[in-house]
Length: 66
Image 1 (cartoon, rainbow, N blue to C red):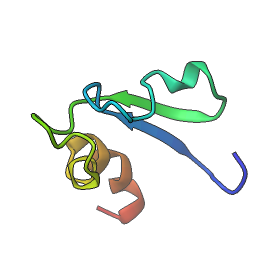
Image 2: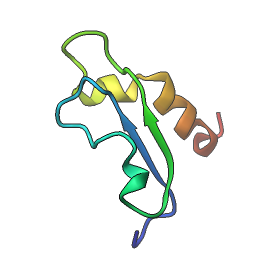
Image 3: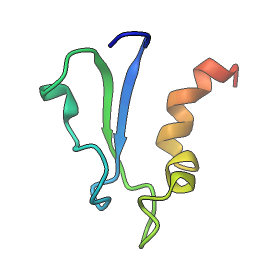
């Protein structure tokens, strides 16, 4: 992946437009491929749902010095 150093896929299985889970089967260079529920009901595709998810927080925390 040009310009990138790490690729992490986080997909909610209820999100109809999320990148499909298990993306690492189709692309090289994906270091983590998470399938996790980021929102209970109908807000699964909203960016705020992904940004507030524990999986996203755990993924970016090491880079934020948290």
